[in-house]
Length: 297
Image 1 (cartoon, rainbow, N blue to C red):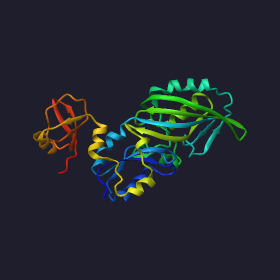
Image 2: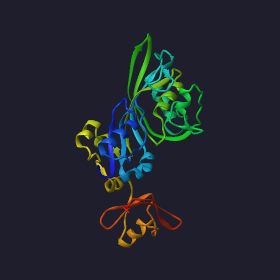
Image 3: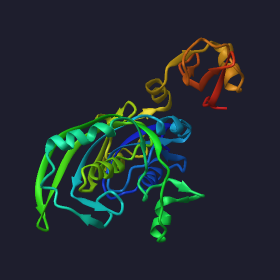
């Protein structure tokens, strides 16, 4: 069985995030596997998978910032806001200039209120929005506050599809957790009056985890069951501020007891005298308390 820790996977297109989890379960020979932030089947790139006790770190991974490269097609709208849905509107985009595209990105950068795509995993009264859309319901989701810290044009290309000009825009996006890049594509197209959808999406980073350390599924197959490329202790050192505990503190914390605060902005990782991860801790009310205890019982 594989060790506890994180696996940074370069997800291929055509697979759901759940498909990747199922594959890693088989390779790592354990049921205790989860992922840190869904990627649509069409999308490729960084998917952080946790194995064993590291699954308890996923709540922090999911909340981390994300980076993407993407291609937005202007001149066509789809039911899903990406290339997996049928085209519902086509407009000749010949009049769309590179300057107007760049200007259109400005209001979509910074802190914005974004309406998620109707075909998304957002739950409405306990059911996913995409399930409601597939059942023929009309779905309107409430806007959410997200942060798009970077939304830059890399290249603008034009081609003719069915006698109409479409404009393909390659972009790079850095954003907060919960941001829908296909909603950015939809909103840019709407702002320019021609409609838009996402034709390609590649996640290049989740927090500090990048494509540079990502493994493909064939590479993981070769080294199974040792699929973890960042053991639990190393993953915590990468992801959190750190505090060293002495033997007495380690004993108290491993049993869920509080420590004296040291003024570190949490959450942070606490390590024992042997360098082993004990807990993820945050300070409030004059005490340092464990959010999760990870020391083996």
